[in-house]
Length: 514
Image: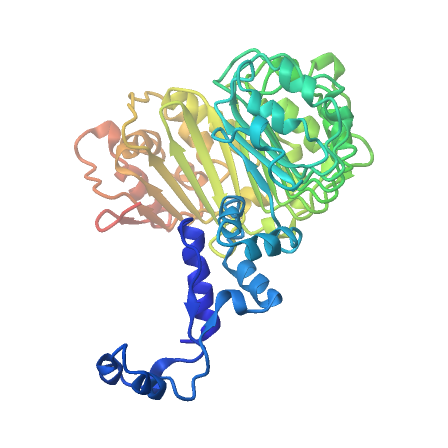
């Protein structure tokens, strides 16, 4: 075995077992002497021992390796993930020389001090060298947990902060984070429990500056002064604003202006906690002549009302956008006219060929995707009742009618999620409205629980009407469909009408799966 490989293996053992101390490493592979001969060598016979080791040189230990070689091995064995902060302290407990070597190379080994729920930071912070600090706390009660505050009292050293499940109030957190954290690259603040009223972070939080911040997540946190902080965060790559409470509302215009400074932003998520966070109708303005460009944005998530998304999309361009997940609250009217324009500037997102419509108990989802690329666009509408879900999705899809998003869809899936209750749909009109924009669909798949609903809408079509719905349809995949149990749920009249119009549809009922 290669001696360097065996050294790496030995050090990996040290990292996984803190009680390991030192390991002797042979200089060459023992292949020159067979195992049977070595087995016959007795410890007390120095002559035979010299024969067995002839030509192999003296044994080499890890500690006899040059420092540069040791550092290379340390760097190779230490994990690249957040577990590195947990792994490297085991090295300094092996021997004094390793301790000196590790502490003398903090930048090369990317050393961090990890502070967690189990770390007595108030007592031990001064024991270690002044290394960058990673703070990871879960279920934090800031009223009694003094260790979090002790770690935050070193703002110049804090590299990342994750505080999950924070118990309110936040006064102690706000008080200790009034100063800038110039070295901080990641910040996550998550309030415990959904729907809780949380006091807003003041504009003095971080003194409005985070020059090296690369990742920012605020979950359930109100921060009206966020735009000011974003204007100073030139290196921001990931921005996640989840469960934005009402007192944390930021208008689309202000949000667009603050995003315009984030030229490195790759992932953006804006999710409101309720539909009450919406633009005022009297304050809505026409789209500006110039738009903010987000040149690196590739992933976008949104949850809120369509008016907010529409006003925001009217003010930004994202030429590299590859994936978007849009969730709307239940509302009577949807307005998404600006969305095709935004996605239309991203050439990689112009090749959708598949659409999947999924029915859930409390929402309906449509996913536009491509068989060639990984790009996708997802819409989710939070509402109950199949009839209401179909009507809402039909309204949304018809607003996309004629756009590249729907015009190239050739395969359409209609699927019900197991466990939901399907009430009988008396009126088939919403289904026909839903199918109307899908003029290029050649294959329609309908899961078994949804077949009776679709059949009740299609069976009444005849003559030219049968050709107006899904005019390019060639294959109908209906696994397990019988068609004769109920006249009202029989879609064969539609099939026959297409046959007579010289546009036959092949029906596949066996061997089909979702």
